[in-house]
Amino acid sequence: DVQLVESGGGLVQPGKSLRLSCAASGFTFRTSWMHWVRQAPGKGLVWVSRINTDGNYGSYADSVRGRFTISRDNAKNTLYLQMDRLRADDTAVYYCARDLTGSRDHWGQGTLVTVSS
Amino acid sequence: QSALTQPASVSESPGQSITISCTGTSSDFATYNYVSWYQQHPGKAPKLLIYDVSNRPSGVSNRFSGSKSGSTASLTISGLQAEDEADYYCSSYRSSGTYVFGTGTKVTVL
Image 1 (cartoon, rainbow over the protein chains, first blue to last red):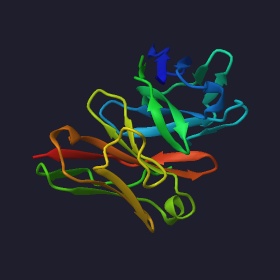
Image 2: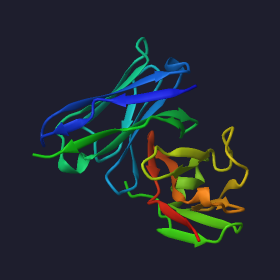
Image 3: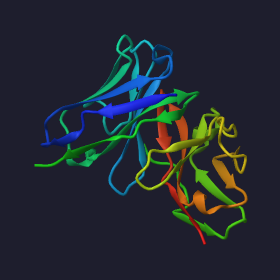
């Protein structure tokens, strides 16, 4: 079975950094594009970023471009999201998801990031 | 990056059908068929219902169907059941490798 397990969330002060991880299993990770999606408390889903199979191309939502960096380690079957210069409006549950022709067919359980002083 | 527009809520009785609309710009839906729909129950991760406008992943009930016309995509749920009460989101590929979700629709089964 496909499994995606996020980790690395927590409470962080504005302006600081945090790195999220997503451990993948049950499928051939190195051949799958991957996404990050977030959801602020009580709000809707927001697409954050996507990375290709080799890890050499990432795309970003306008709201995070220049502050967040998506990456992957295919040897470790792990996806990452480096989040710098965090702001209060980055507070959300962050999900990793596997790509299926532009959709997201499997999702992790999410990890909560709270940005507050 | 403005979100796709969905009705905030839809309510209907069990056994009936509902259709949720998802409106974007002509560029959102005209060029690509990367429209997908997701169901999310409270406190749970989203679940893929429809991809590539009208395809259902294995295991998804055929009561769920998708379509697209012009700048609007639609999700139809037929034979509404209590377990269908959830939030529903559309999503589309936008351009340059970016994607967008809809504003979300809360479905209530009366």
